[in-house]
Each structure stands twice: as C-alpha cells, then as structure tokens.
Amino acid sequence: MNRSWTKKAVSGSLVRVASALLLISVPCPALLAQNAVDLKPTPQQTEWQDMEFGVILHFDTNTFLNQEWGDGTASPKVFNPTNFNPDQWMKAIKASGAKYVVMVAKHHDGFALWPTGQTDYSIKQSPWKDGKGDVVREVANAARANGLKFGIYLSPWDRHEPKYKDPAAYDKYYNAELEELVTNYGDLAEFWLDGAGSTGRTYNFPRIIETLRTYQPNTIVFADTSLFEYGDARWAGDESGKIEYQNWNVIDRHGYLRWRPVEVDTPLRKFHWFWHPNDEASLKSVDELIDSYENSVGHGGQWMLGVAPDNRGLLPDVDVARLRELGATITSRYGNGLLHPQMTTDANVAKALDDDASTFWSAPADSHSATLEVQLPHAMTFDHALTMEWLVEGQQVQQYSIDAFVDGTWKTVVSSYAIGHKKIDHFAPVKAQRVRLHILTSAGVARIRTFQIYSLDGAKVEAAR
Image (cartoon, rainbow, N blue to C red; front, side, top):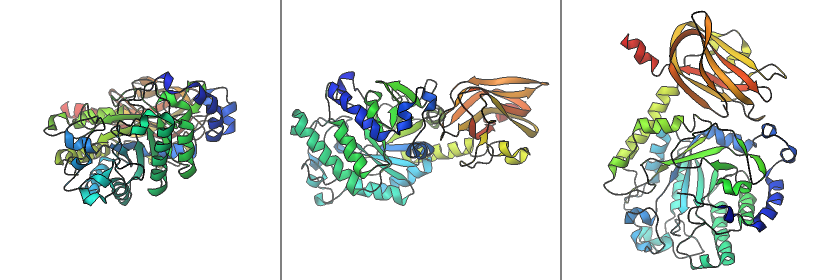
C-alpha cells in the first residue's frame, strides 16, 4: 500500500495535457477562481464525503504465501480458498459502520482476481472453482446485497506482466484491464490509483482517466498528491490513520487549485494489509481504532480501513468481533448527543440540532463572523463536540471557538481553524447550561449542518465525585 510517486512520475508530456483534462473534470468557474475559498465540491464529491468510512480489501496469492508484496512469480495454483464467503465479510464490515468497500482487483504482483481476457495470470489458472470463479463479481454482489457501495483498486505497477518493460504496450494492457472492470461490475463508488513501486515510471494517465470517465463518470478517483490533476481525492500523506494538520479541502499542487478531500488509509492489523497466520497480536484495539476514526473522519477526512480475509476466504473471528465492537463504539459515542431541537425556539439553530443532513443553520447574509448558541434545560457536563459544515458552497469557516458559559462568563474550551465535512473536538470536561459555536472568521456565510456536544469522559468524572 505504500505510495511512492515522485515528481518524475508526471512527465512534461502529462503536464501539457493536464490543462485539457482539467477543463473536462472541473467546472469553468473553478478555473477562474483566484482563491481556494471560491472553489466548491462536485455533487459526486459531497455524496462521497458523506459516506465517511470505507474498507479496502486485500486478498490474493499473498494471502496463501504469508507475504505482503508478491514479486509476480507465485503460482496461480496457490490461490484456493476453501470457504470463500464475501457475504460474511460484508456483514462484519456493515456492522463496523463502513458505507463502502474497495476491492483490490490486482495488487502489485499482477495476479488478477477476475477472469480477465488480458492474461492467464489470474484466477482462471487457479483450482478455485475449477478456474471459473470471479472474486471481483462475488465481492461486488455481496457488498451491494448488504447495502454497501463498491469500488476498485487496480495497481499500475505489475511485477508479473512481461509487457511492463514496454511502457506503450503496458499502457494498452492496463487500459484493457481497466475497461473490463469499469464496464462489467456496476457503478463504482471509488477508483484507486496507487503509486507503490512506480518511482520514475510514467503511465498514460490521461487515457486511464478518459476510459474511466467514459463508463464511470461519477466515480471518485483517489490519487496521490503528485497526480493532482487526475484525482478527486488525495492521500493524507502516510498510513498512520490520522490527519495531523488543519484539513482544508482545497490545496495547491502543480499549480492546480481544485476541491480534493483527504482519504486516510490504515490497516485493521498493524503494519500490514494482507492476512498472515499466527498474527492475532497485530490486531488493533478498539481504542486505537477510535483514535484513528476521530483523527480522520473527525478531522474532516475519509477513513479507509484495511481488512483482509484469511486463506479460507473468511474474515477471522477476532477481526469480525473487532469490527462489530468498532461499530458499536462509534454508535455509543456519537449516536446520541446532548443537544436537541427542542432546546431552542430559534428555527435557524434547530436546523443544526435536528440530525437531518439536508438542513443547516446559516449565519446572517454577508456575514464573516457569527454565533450559534444553545441553552440546555439544566447544567450538563460535556467534553466532546462534533461540528459539520454544509460544504455545497465551499469550505467557509476559517477560525472558530467553542465556548461554555461558566460562572457568568464565556469560557473558551476549543480554539481551532478548519471545520470542513466533520470536526470532532475533545477538551477537559466542563459543566455549563449554555454553549456556543463562535465563528470567528469565515470567508463567506458560514453554514453548519450539525453542532452537537457529548459527555464521553465527563460522565466518569461526575460519577467519581
């Protein structure tokens, strides 16, 4: 999964065609924008950001050989799951709270998990289902049957295919594989461009995106920041599972300003993406996963959790249990807040408290600062806050605070900058009957879909008194 694109990966020829590609993929007003705050997401991007949490699935010959990166020499005969059951995967993934899955259809070893017509190095040569199976189709069907969106990862780096030595021939080969995947497996929520192993290599990205967009115009393309002109979403920068900086949805790279939200990838098991035997100690704890969730989704990003079936074709029982624990913990922490629409007679404020993602509180017209205040029925202890911006008109909030009215004065408990899709703030427990979100500075009119507070640590403090 490690991405290692360098500046060399985008050659002068690609830069020359990037402007034409950008004209196709970005509305003309965005091209004329002089400031990042003028840029807005596409409807596809806001829909994708609302999913918040996805799972990426790694399962191929590596699963049977106790390795992470295959070198392309593994025999297809080793791929033979005895109890392949993607429905079991999806039920566990659904329980975790994830909304979509991305299947690694071909990893860097070049082994294809669908019966591609481009190579025999695929499940056609495996003993599984006498070579007549299709992992990608079964996973896609299981995902959709369980209410999950489906996406594809197709590695550009291919350590098996002989054509890889000839860039033009390999570009044709890769594009043919891509066309099979984007025409035969239904709507794709996301397509991954992973740069691992491709340092110094240039692919025909304009053609890749052209093929994708011809058949899948609404698919969100994940790409490393060095491929900015081709991506709808960008990498966080590492695989720690956290966004450790102020998260703005528009940043400049290669001279291109465009709305590009962050996707944060991290595995369920520490340090690796494929299943390995006798490896239960690597499974992340619920606390570790919640910390990652709160510092990815809770920092305005998308959380992509790596999950790996074992050599039976099942998720291990401990992984299933952990995913269910994760979903239950997220729900218990953020399913019910302390604020409700009934707490205010202000219809505008009520729209930020009503759990309806289609409504939002709006600051006064033409304002660049504002206050959203709520009075609770009695003093309550709280220590977390969750805030969501309505992003259809762009990311407007530039600086904000969260304040509690304590002993006759407003006390700031949070002082920060970017909110974006979702921001989870935690702070020392405070007891108050009034709380406010203070928009200190906004580029335009601030609009807040959700403002909520929680007592996650404070309840323990109260009980101990």
